[in-house]
Amino acid sequence: MIETIAAPSPNFDPRKSPPDMIVLHYTGMQTGAEALARLRDPEARVSAHYLVEEDGRIFTLVSEERRAWHAGAGFWKGERDINAVSIGVEVVNPGREWGYRAFPDRQIEAVIALLSDIRGRWDVANGRILGHSDTAPARKEDPGELFPWKRLADAGHGLWAEPTVAPGQALTIGDEGPGVFVLQAGLARLGYENPPSGQYDEATATNIRAFQRHWRPGAVDGIADGETRARLMAVLRAGVASGG
Image (cartoon, rainbow, N blue to C red; front, side):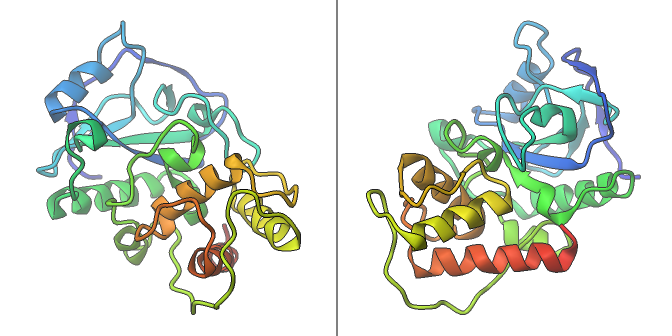
């Protein structure tokens, strides 16, 4: 067990089944203290199971056995009540409104330790360690492209892949045909709500941006170029290899 600081929040309700997903957020407020206060405010009606400060301190707000209110409306692999199946971890960072910045090493070390601790109690597959932007691409951008997903995966938590880039024409809004259909099928197979239609619409571009924030942070533009498509296929293969 890791050492945490108790900071109980009243904002929770019962679970109907054990959690099998972890959703990572950034707080998007000026300070961690402000975020902690909001997550404990009964009138705010938001919470998370944990908050990880920039200095590495970990606060426990809601018992893992309870349903915290951190994800809101979302979707992943057919599940729409993300709160019901997930453990929510808020990572202190000002976010885009207050000066988005890199996450300190001590903070990420604490996140990795926390993930190890959580996964020692619950069956959470690597493919179900996600960002808020993965489960709600049209609403959320956190924890964003500065979050070190590769570092987490190198520590054994989450999916990552470094594919050989295959040259090919980029796909973008307005394109249609078999290539778009295959792209959309890949996004849907990974977990995004993206039924294949063969038409590259705004919803597809939104999902590509979410995918890029997590797995191709160097170019978050909603355009499925060769590298983005190669990474999608590689992440899917990595998910199969890891059992989820």
